Image 1: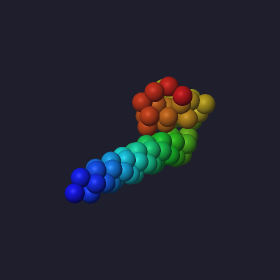
Image 2 (image 1 turned 30 degrees about the horizontal axis):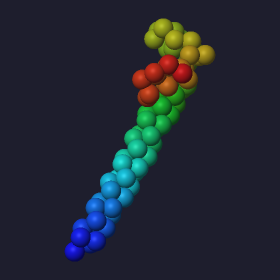
Image 3 (image 1 turned 120 degrees about the horizontal axis):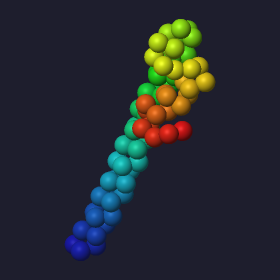
Amino acid sequence: MAMATGYQGQANEGQTLLVRLFAQIGERYARYAAYRKCLDELSSMNNRELSDLGLRRSLIRTVAYQQAYGQPA
């Protein structure tokens, strides 16, 4: 009986690890999707619209990265 209990504990640890792995993958995908969405939206704007927001076209990637990941590129 003790062996079965020890085995079950290892299975739970492995399962927990797998759940965390999938959660991390999901979080990374969500952040990348947010980055791409912001990048696409800003890229579709013309220079006048970007200027109204106080941005230059050269800053689009930096702004999209900061929006999605919350840290400087």
